Image 1: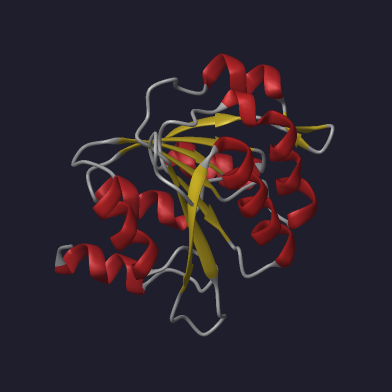
Image 2: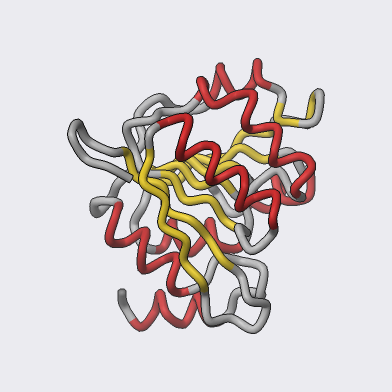
Length: 177
């Protein structure tokens, strides 16, 4: 990770992904790889500066506008029945990506609706689920890992908020959790 990227990470607010998450992404995703991100924010810019192609799905008009004005590849998908409008997700989410980041919609009550839509996303690539210091997100990560046959690694960060994220990686034939 370059010093420039480290400086960008240092400027993020406490609720954004931290240096540990970006370091893990760098280990998982090949250079110039593609990332599909549920929820955009300050970390999206860091990922772009790291050289990744980032495609974001965003429900919040404010963050959508920020991402769009920054030149990011972002799709506005308002919440419908508690989660992103699935007709928009199906239509605009890329099918080819190296990592799925789950960092939206905001709040446990909305994010948990992902469970009804797992079929929309690839199960042969790693997932990063942010904010698993919150019980709903932690449980969601556990259930996804079980349902999609992923290995789950919980990672505690060193930021002052005590954030945590999980990396889910597909298990290969013959491997065990």
